[in-house]
Length: 274
Image (tube, rainbow, N blue to C red; front, side):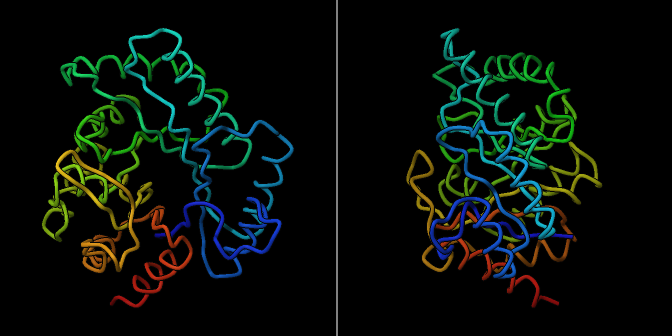
């Protein structure tokens, strides 16, 4: 089963807004999932997490999270590296309380270093984080494919790292499209992407993916900003056909600036495919 998630509280959510009301409103629109955008900081109120968990369960809605942007697991500065690990741990721990299944993380910057060395730095950092797995036994740590060439996060990098720790990544075809300056935007390339995913993580892994999708603006060095689907060069209808044909399951988070409008556009288009 594939669900389409809105990236944050829908824009049309009645005041005073907030995650709980956003979940209720998304459900009323026919949206089945939400990614909570903890990109500035991680909420720390356990009672609030319980309220979110109950609300999502009542609406049979799947939850994912986007962890804070301020993370670099390749930082040479011990304090920044420790803070990055702490932000990830906080996001995973609070996600466990909220009933979240997967947390998307922007893992690192290369900082001019050899990608192989950066991979080893991330491997060690991941090992440190997962020593605390008892705090988040039901939550996946999903390193994201990144949209800028200066960032760690090619498809192969995140798949290789995920396989080593029995995780699964957050695959973002829009980021991959931007990082390659306009490639990764065809049925053939998306099938190759899923073939690689299956090669590393097994066929069953394609039944519980964590993905992002949107239109995207880009330049020579990659991502600039997200765009609405119809204002971009993304062949999004072809992408939906690949998802349908391959029977991909899990959650696709629509990161369009139009939030619920493009989430519903993707869902309704997908549902209408034969």
